Length: 434
Image (cartoon, rainbow, N blue to C red; front, top):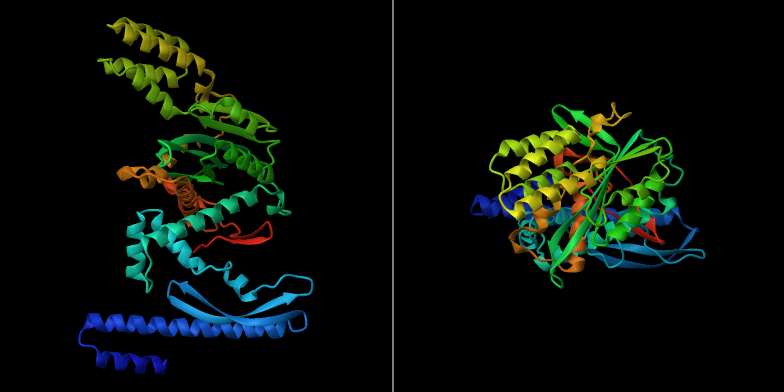
């Protein structure tokens, strides 16, 4: 402490103004912190070598430089080998550092979190302003791709039954499953589609807000692969034998009822819903020509009362209001759409045996915003790998299952702590977290 005080006094005497003084104090503090941390790592590495003396052979001592949030740290550590095993650096494993990795886990997490909400140039400027580092926007892009790849490996590892170990399967009374796709502009093609499926076990009321519990998201460009990961996740984490599965979708290609029937195999009961937002949007599109909006409002009301006779009556009146063949055709197409999906349009309160189920469906569409706000504005276009990495990063930063705790996601969805460091094909996957 006395040394730091004397150093600070010398800096005060040598600086001409407060701005220069604060910069020098910051720079000198970073140097001292980096040196102290490097020395602590070397001492700890030596203690581990003494503790495991005779159990492993020390091959050599190598130097390594890592960029951390508080500065550049250069330290030496031992390369060891257990009998019959491969050489490894114990200290690197403790720090969560992969071979040739130049950035610390916290720095990876921080840069990724900033880049998940802003363009790479702005993220680089923020890091350069608030830390002693100097990185380019290209480096930010590489970091995002690195973290995105690691999160993809983490999701792949959950498809392995060994990931859960001996943990008992969850046995929720209700399980909510939703799926939908959203288009993004691509570079090689005109567009790419992000496929998203989300799982939740219920709804929790906090004041006036509702949050999903047991929330988990799977996303990617390959719908078939995303579905495979979701199926493996359900098999490894849930016992559906006494569970009622409630699913919701817009009924588009790849999101029809039969897809969710397969996901709900083995469950006690499966109830599928047509997404309310898309149904209302379909009604607005088909009846955009109607001048008497009260008639359209009446149709909405009858649909969600599940009053088939009332819906038929409203459509008859609307067909009478039509003045062109195109308008009549729109009414007929709307009737065919409602008739085709009528079973799935039954509201939750009107389904027998679900009276105690609190509303937990219909959030998939609003949760698209965490992707569209970052990836669709300002005419952005994405390469396949870069776009996929950003999708994984958005999942990682905003939803549970990313090795972090605390609030996150859209609408106050809270996350739970999961193991951020897992084994995958013999390689350590470290997901940086706060």
